[in-house]
Length: 475
Ligand SMILES: Cc1cc2nc3c(=O)[nH]c(=O)nc-3n(C[C@H](O)[C@H](O)[C@H](O)COP(=O)(O)OP(=O)(O)OC[C@H]3O[C@@H](n4cnc5c(N)ncnc54)[C@H](O)[C@@H]3O)c2cc1C
Ligand code: FES
Ligand code: FES
Image 1 (cartoon, rainbow, N blue to C red):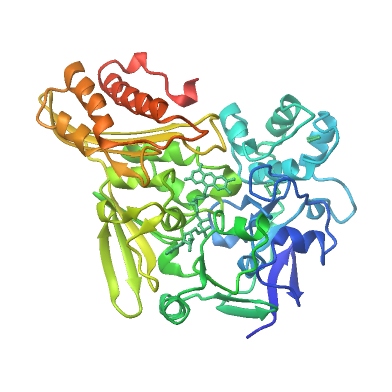
Image 2: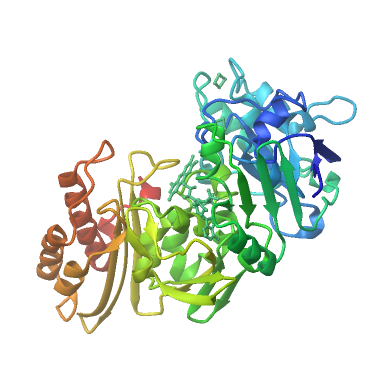
């Protein structure tokens, strides 16, 4: 086993010798690397003070860089990547980068604690070549909290650096090392296979190891809870788990494709799914998190899960002993955070049935804040309405039960009925037979039931009086 983790830092190849592969990148930067520009605020992916940029060499295609939370990344995940920190933005002569200049000139900083993280989000935004539209700027900043400056000067500085031709330093990124890797340091072994067979063999031989994709759920056990895993098996470098492909009526999503990588596929009839994914966490979270991880965590408020239920998804699961098998999304969630996965299984890919012309498909996420917030209720619906009569309906909700679940009584109240107020009211009433919702600080059971019923009424209005419905982006 190699004993060094190799990656590219601020354009230069580096190795991190003698550190635990489960150490967070944030701890490594601020400790052994003595790069203290990257700050720790919350240690759980919320504040953005620890934001770094994950860069790709230009030849790799796609966006040239993504912002990510260093507090959630384990060092083993960083192997073979290119990372830029705030210290890597000045040029060789010490001249600040244009994004640094813009924030300073615009008085976008006071105490300065959030500033390096905001600078890195600005850098990733500028490098991505996006236009200076308010919605995009707010989206790019949603993962960064500032407690003292106020966001107006930061937003204005961001608009000034958008699409600046000299903003990206990505052309300076060297190609990082590739190939499978494994490290044992101190209490932790970390395997990072690059083939499906190797991953399956590791899962078979070490069913108790942490199976890690993006780490936006599991990483908190290290960064926040300070757990030290005995063994981590990283799935994210296996090509079969990274792919996406579209056939006419089917989208296949590799389980370890990040949300950022998935978004370009969620267009046209899947646009409501895309709009919801843009509200999942922040850009920093979406650069790391995956649907495979959302399924693996199987939280009752996992945002993609009701969508998979509504779209009649198939979860492709594989193990070394039993080979591949397809699990219908309806059969995947067995109980609170319990799934149909066996100890030696991995999720390889997810197939979703793309809504076809004539079908109605919508997703609603209801949370206290628009961005970077967990759902109180999430509804996803797919219906076929012909000649004014509902022919088929799949209605699925998160936040309403111990698992994400379909509202089968509500579906039955719609199918075969004229698409009108009467059927909608009966479906909304049936939700009380479908669910005994969670009752917690995000929302009482009565609130959640009322919201879910109103979401069905809103769905009806969307199809009959679209001008009367304000979508969340219009609020
Ligand atoms: C600040 C913050 C905001 C968030 N906001 C949201 C939000 O708005 N909505 C939401 O739904 N979630 C949110 N999350 C939770 C998290 O981002 C998602 O659940 C995400 O999809 C997890 O994916 P991951 O790749 O990071 O999973 P990981 O943390 O790597 O893994 C999660 C679980 O899935 C298992 N797993 C991963 N890949 C596989 C596989 N291929 N096969 C089998 N098991 C696997 C792991 O073993 C683990 O049990 C947020 C998290 C943070 C930190
Ligand atoms: S320290 Fe707050 S997001 Fe990482
Ligand atoms: S400048 Fe103080 S937290 Fe942002």
